[in-house]
Image 1 (spheres, rainbow, N blue to C red):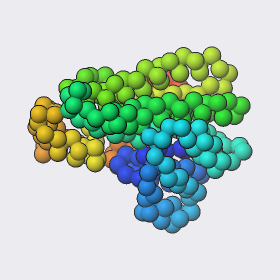
Image 2 (cartoon, rainbow, N blue to C red):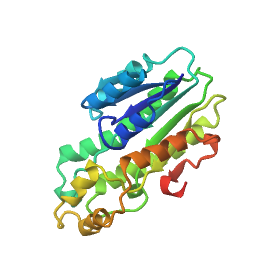
Image 3 (tube, helix red, strand yellow):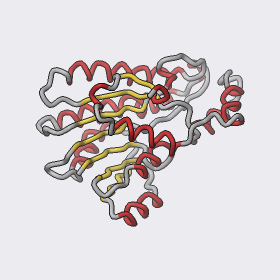
Length: 250
């Protein structure tokens, strides 16, 4: 059985990913702040083992235990194990001096600290498992190009890119190391995009440009993106994929 751990699986790309991975030889362990009943019903209909753990990733103190709970659903001899750090938040939006402290803390916690802690725990717990082990961090073009008004989001995504590079170097020294990638998925038609389009121009000067993406049909669907991400994960030579990559170039 192939095992997949997915964060932020109640909506958007995470939900689409979970649906795309609902196959009989897969075990899915998903986490989000709220459970998606549609996903649970679909898994039951298909006879796929799905565990859903309700958790707020901003509560970083409990993330080590969360990984223990996720691994508890894994068989002793899996064919492969993949962690997909997908959960993300865009707020706060606006000049950094106007950003509430709590929103800055939550942004970095969800977008950067949580994936780091979960990846650390994943590698540590599975060190002796001699099977393909993968970590996919869902990053953003905002981690590679700065946007005024998105300072926290840009910083967190740049951080997850560079974190992935460092972990990749570490794991190459291990005989059964984890292959890690940080992938920018493109501009996707999700709730995050709705939030961006609803922003006041004084807080995000490019808001009209993002409205234009929607009006011109330039947004990818979550379902299209999920299919490409699954293709990436199941690439016949996943180890050859660049550590920091863009899904649109694959």
